[in-house]
Amino acid sequence: QVQLVESGGGLVQPGGSLKLSCAASGFTFNDYHIAWYRQTPGKEREFVALITNTYTGSTTNYAGSERDRFTISRDNAKRTVYLEMNSLKPEDTAVYYCNQFPPQRNSWGQGTQVTVSS
Image (tube, rainbow, N blue to C red):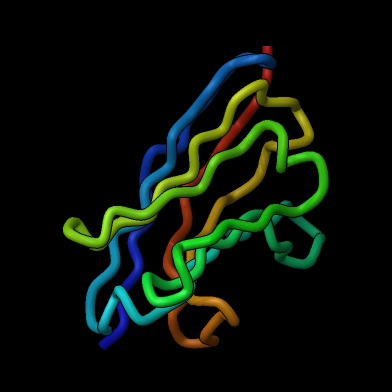
């Protein structure tokens, strides 16, 4: 059974940093592209960042301005994907989720809340 557990969220001031973690189990981790997504109330869940599988070089891709502020990485030995977020803005406030890419409907976890506020 695929399981993805997000952690590391919290309350941070504008300009601050957070590092999110996504612990994966139940599938051959190295074989899969993994992405971070986020959702705010009343809006569709949106793509944030992607890291491809080991066989395609673990290349990365980002949405919009996140390219300059966020860094996605993976530790295959720990079966974990990270999202390091710097220069956080109030508009980054959301629940952050990880999932395979393309996302699997039944693999969404609980997410981790990130709140950027002074």
